[in-house]
Length: 217
Image (cartoon, helix red, strand yellow):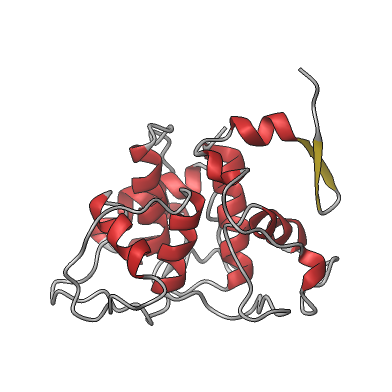
């Protein structure tokens, strides 16, 4: 089979390999962007290749026509839309969250995530779309997504190796342990895991790239 090649930053990857990553939306079917379109993406930054990967695969989009805003946090609405895009934006599902309007740009994503048991709201029957996504929330979303597509979710890491590992919420201990062991989430300065802290868009880009290359392989 003849291979075509795609450039991601300074890395060249065979298109045949990209097509082997399921769902197929990672290669086709979603709107993609070039990192060259964004004025605030430093090609020498630590997150440059990850930002390029997520943009070129339609996983993340900009915050404006020419801005990526790498230091801004990702909201829960942005997070659910991101994973929905990775799945090819299927038109399916429903939800009953009182704070998600049918006209909201993320309504279809919330409905899909609810039907697939990927991401949940809060006990009050609300989704809180404008809240920042936390690192432990993101770990659970990706853990649920990996289980849905029967990827390996057996690896575990001892969270007590981190100075604040014991601050992980009980509902996220399994997913955070898996995310660390799978190389998706790493510690911050001072050996801090920061499970309940928000993540910047640059960090999210790196986590999602790690997920695609480490888990969806």
